[in-house]
Image 1 (cartoon, rainbow, N blue to C red):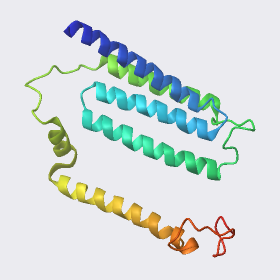
Image 2 (image 1 turned 120 degrees about the vertical axis):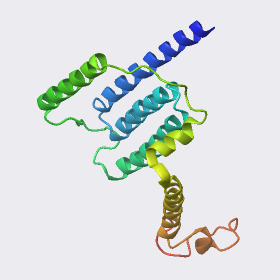
Image 3 (image 1 turned 90 degrees about the vertical axis):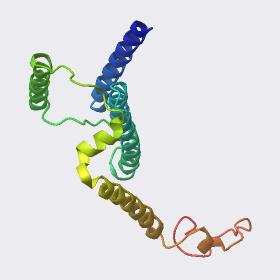
Image 4 (image 1 turned 90 degrees about the horizontal axis):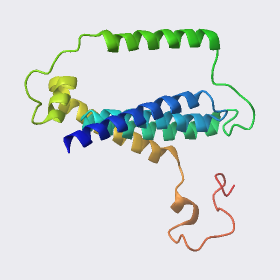
Length: 193
């Protein structure tokens, strides 16, 4: 059974790795900024899957959640502000193609050589009983409670900003009875004009 699980882990690893690289390449092949954004999301989700496969559940879930939300927001902004969001006109995502190719090949060769040639240490001791707590302590030290509080404060700030960004709500436009719609929006501006 353990041999089957090891083979399955290897298969999943290679599928995720190849998918991450392929979708990363597609970021630079698509004409559409929205498609490029979702190709990048696919690549980052595969990376999150690799982290989950390594047994770092907390980091893997955080990567998946962060990248999903970030890329969804990015796609919205790309459609709103980019000149060619739908890829209707030819465009390229790459500038200085030769220089970029040389830099990418060099960085890849150095990283691959580092992976292959590095003297990897052997495991000493046993895994922790609570790896999430140990990971949080090693990343943030005694400031973990502060960072959690800041995270909640930032989230509350984002929600409050979105709520306060519009002066009008549905009750401002139509009153309490939302079913009794008039043909025209009583307040100028917005969708009803």
